[in-house]
Length: 318
Image (tube, rainbow, N blue to C red; front, side, top):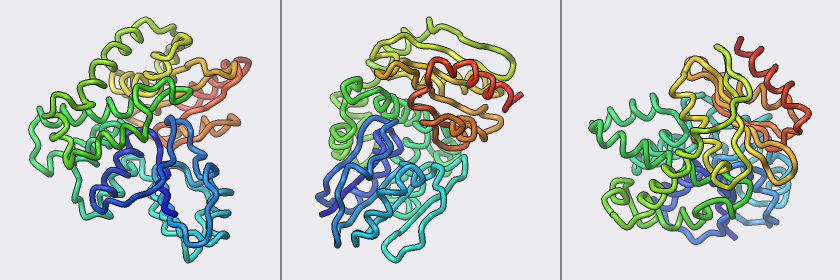
């Protein structure tokens, strides 16, 4: 059996998109909303299985990874999140880069000799790596208009991945991947007026308009924390809104709180763009926290721990 296990955000989807465009292969797709990252435990691997894991923390999937390797499966693991101690095993092919200006799609693009680098740049924009994406786009001689189009597309794909459950999303991530597979270049999709680009653009703009009235829980020179209402649109914008706020105030850390369906908060954290470190350190202090240096989150923050979280955020960057 062949499996593709991938994050449901722009980086995860586009990482797989590049691999499948380079070598179309029939696989079982395992994915979910962006915060659904313990995806390896959703399969029961057997000897001889081939598994590709893209853009989900190895540390968060370590028990299932060990099980897969012990069962005799071969695993290709590509990621840029906190990895923990990477196992040494003949059947594990790990491509891990924790650089704050790297994303999984850029790693995949390097592995493929940049065959579909325009897609990787789109993913980098979606992952809020604007400076890195601009640099890569400039190497290809893209115009400002083309860069703005790829930035928008990456943002829209990333926006679609946020929600407490797949029902919150406009497209299930596996379905969105299939819709994108017909385009070898993101510009092919942008030039197709019937493509998913325009569906997501309209939805994104409508949701972001609603987010303008978010409740401010804390705001100082160091950090800003906002709370969105309990609605599907709010869960959809939780990540891209954090990116947007970070770009507006690059010297501040930002956190966006949304209600989950478990009586607690889902928290999306962005380190200051001028100091892209620490987000995962802060979030890892809480039971369901994780991520990477520049961007991290907490899946279930009890309401009683909100003040503690704000204190940790402000003190870290203060």
